[in-house]
Image (cartoon, rainbow, N blue to C red):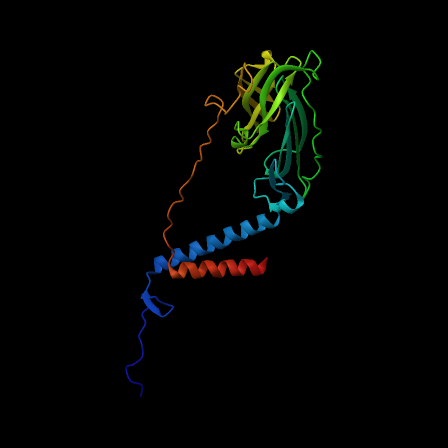
Length: 290
C-alpha cells in the first residue's frame, strides 16, 4: 500500500514550476498571460510579413565627403508606411567654390522627378529630386554640372582693388578667417559678403546650413530672403561690408544654432517568466513558419 507521500491537487489550484521555482498562479492571471502572448505572436507575425514585403532602397548622406560612395551606401528596408526610394542632389556655387550635398533613403509619397535652378548675385544653386517605387531604384541621378554665377558688368578678369575672404563649406569652423582663402575681387564685385544658406527639401529634417564668404555686388547685400519652390524652401541670410578682408569670422547675426531634441523612453515593467517564455516560443514558431 502506498503511503501518504503523494502530492494532492485540487481543481481550484494551478501550480507552475519555472526554473526550479514553484508558485501558485490565479487562473485569471494565467488567462491574461495566455491572451497577451497570443496577441504578441499575431503582431510579430504581421510585422515580419510587412518586413518581408518592404521596399529596398539605398541610403546615404554626402556633404563634401565620400558619404555616398558605393562602399558607404548600404541597402535598407523601408518600414511601412514608407513607400518610395528617394535621391536628392543639391549643388551651390560661388565664384570660387562649389559644394554638393547628396542624400538617398526611404520616404513617403508619390513618384516624382524634379529639377530647379535658382541664382542671385552671391550663389548659383541647383536641386535635383527623384523618387521611385521599385527596389534599388534610387541610383539614377548623375552628378550636377558646375555653373558659376555670371553677374559682372565689367571685365571680370580685371581686379578692382577689393580683396575678401572666400569660403564655401558645410563647416562653420572651416570658414573661420584663419582657414579661408584670400581672393581678389574683380569687375563690379566691390564688397565682401558673409552668410549662410539652408535648403529644406520636403520631409528632410536634417537640413544644415552651408557657410559662405565671397566677393559681392553692392545690390546683393540684402540681409536675408526666403524662396519657396516646388518640394523645397531656400533660406539665405548674410550681410556685406566694405574694406579689404572685412568678412572675417562669422558674426552672431549669421550664425545658426542647432537644438538637439532628445527623447526619454518610458520604463517598462518586466514581464513574468511565463510571459517571457511564451513570447520567445511565439517568436520561434513564427520564424519557423516564415
